[in-house]
Length: 183
Image (cartoon, rainbow, N blue to C red; front, side, top):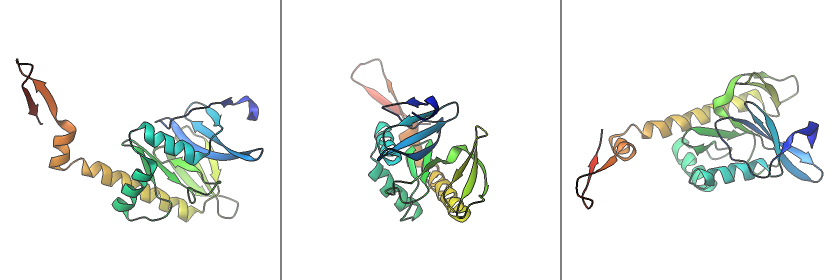
């Protein structure tokens, strides 16, 4: 493996995940996973990792994609809420084998790269990674992701959502009776 990096068979996107980069390994596409503290390599494509991570957090990738499309009106390169707290966006069509997935939360700064249609991104661990995406497309993806996150979090502020998310079931003295309390 590349510079002795750890090869991992299973990976779940988490709050430390910064970016999923496709890398060519022989005739296959693997994923170089950058986290806050360490990097590793997975024998799976970035999209496969995103899809499996969505399942780990209780939904399908396709379901999350449909919801995102409906919420923000985007049709292509739709950002994904992997979980209620983790948002990733693709740099190209997710089906493209060279698509990079970026964790919105860890983007600190970005600027136009020296190469045509490239952007250099600074992440929360002070790492700079050049990406094959134009500055305007990168900004658009960030904006879409913020819109998605805002709409999802805003929907949890409605009275109905508050009841759903904050309801507690408190058992009374009788094992058969239950009362719902909302705050």
